[in-house]
Image (cartoon, rainbow, N blue to C red; front, side):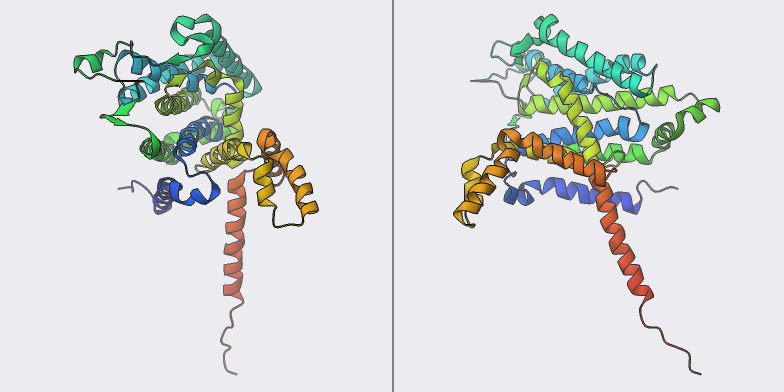
Length: 380
């Protein structure tokens, strides 16, 4: 009887879970231990893990995944408005709606491959953005965004006699999902999403996806129909994006068209490439790095830099403040761009390639040490 998980997979999952659950502790010295940012780490980690199932395993590069992210947000907010403020029904509703939307888009886009597929996904995403922004305003509330109000029907909450005072806030079993409670709620979904992705990657279905990426033409020549597998990967990836969008609506109960812009789609591509395409942990690391830059480096100003360089002589400190100020604050994109260029040039496989290289050096040094150990010579 085959094992449910191999020893390496179990260690990877346990290590990943431990790192995620202890983030408030080990990120505190880096100024990133506060709940709002930690929640974004979890949400965009889920987004990147799902995108990697399509791009990393199957080889289909989508430039329109933000459409599913936005649809998940809208679906969750409508669940809060019409049904209940409980987060679980909203999550289920968002995942189902995003999956159905991905099924339609994927069925059309997967008629083409390569750059044509990418352009088609971008076109559908931009159409979705424009529909949400200016056409479907009764559903999306246009540029203002969809928000919760006291006048929302919430039929399930009304049926059980649950009332609210002040601004409605999503909850789970009556517990508000704010602060660290919201972080651990999102962390649980990230760990679950990682576990499912890990099982997909190691399953026969995952092997088929990797074969499609390796040589789809050869598979088609042998008479194998690859399209159902590619469509399944597209739908699963879209459901992950919808889950991430729903979680963002849970932590920030607002859904706007800006979440569907092409820049949001490009961001998840950068996250995946930066961390390592096709790896399990890499996209999550890439998401964390980009969100760290966006929220921490963008908040640095000249006063903070002056205090940081205060141990140097005044003239040198002033020069360094002037130089480094170009890479933080409003210029944090420059730092991100430089990091991305360095990774692409020197680590084409992303940050995880660097991790593998370092691990390989340690293994080689250990094996060479074992080989050079003194050996007992036979007596003559």
